[in-house]
Image 1 (cartoon, rainbow, N blue to C red):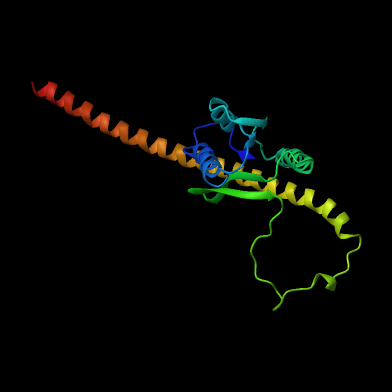
Image 2 (cartoon, rainbow, N blue to C red):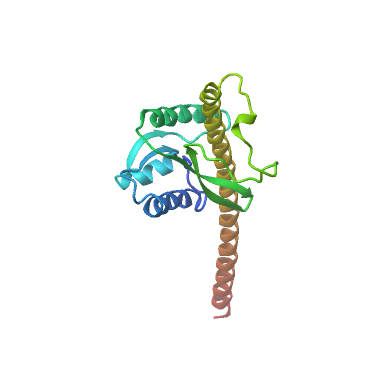
Length: 200
């Protein structure tokens, strides 16, 4: 799943995502039989359509009001593909918000579910027989995994939305500063030319 934006004027926001996808596919997934993309955002779709990439689906970029619905629909699609054996792994690529001036592209595997590294609260390994599950482990997993994938995609959508607005704000600030510098330089040049003509 590639998360980009529908609009530009946000600096390298979209370029960073698509370049990260290309690098990851070339380096990490080079042994895979085929890489197919589910694209969220018009800019990512435009880029990969021109490169004859296998695009499974395309959706417009989410906004705050529909981000949860986009995440739910995307999660249902990839879970169905995974269960049907159409894909063996699912990744999401998005811009993660760091601060108003910087965003970092994040590539995260969402299926099969991998646990993030964390220190165990106990000193030794916990035996699985120490726990009783009600309902069964399989029923719990069948209910929790789809919710887990939806929340991961919802978070990615919100991070992407926030990063886009931050990148757009930074790009517009830079454009305004550059325009001001250009106006000052041209005004100085005009005044020098006017003064030279008066002197002559």
